[in-house]
Image 1 (spheres, helix red, strand yellow):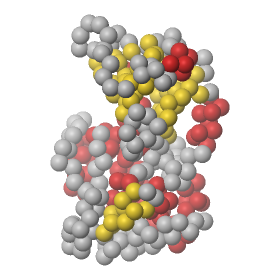
Image 2 (image 1 turned 30 degrees about the vertical axis):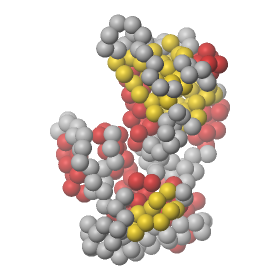
Image 3 (image 1 turned 45 degrees about the vertical axis):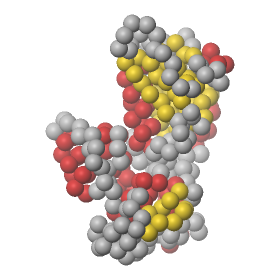
Length: 275
């Protein structure tokens, strides 16, 4: 499932392609015909995301709400030829202008909602490290009262929005936190360190389109961005994610794995002892 950086990057790209235009809105697949008709002919105002939820505002208080789920994609293409872009696959929603075509395929959710409903969805979500005004205190209050493991809590979008399986595994390793420790046993200083690490790492994912967590690659990307460059890092590596049975990069112990919150968690039992 795409993590929060992917949705923030998508919102940015949708704005670049469609903000200020009045795109044709259709449903080639036919499953969103009524919703598309509500948006067709309205100006695209702007797009934004909160965690794994994407919102696009159109004029007259109409909002497109999308959750990609496990298999959803939202591609944006420039027209390389004259004429309509051919439909490839099951396109639930299409946004089209003379210059760009945005195709949404396989989303878990695609709906037209009101401003009040947008507020209601956002009100159920935890703080998002990528938003300009997050409040980590909201996440901490839920963590410190919970008997669930910190690994499960980090995947709960009502506690912390935008973090998925890769970021939780990698950040818990970076901060040396045992993933199965109960939330109520996590120290405030540990939560602060986790939060600040996400605030540092997730924007790199927005910039590169990939999750970057290994120290050497983090430093490289930060240096590139400071120089006005973006390195796609095709050989991105990880500390623990998808490395079950392999030696820990720090101590050599075998990386462990266990299903937590429906996804395979990865960690080093020797390095990750912090509470």
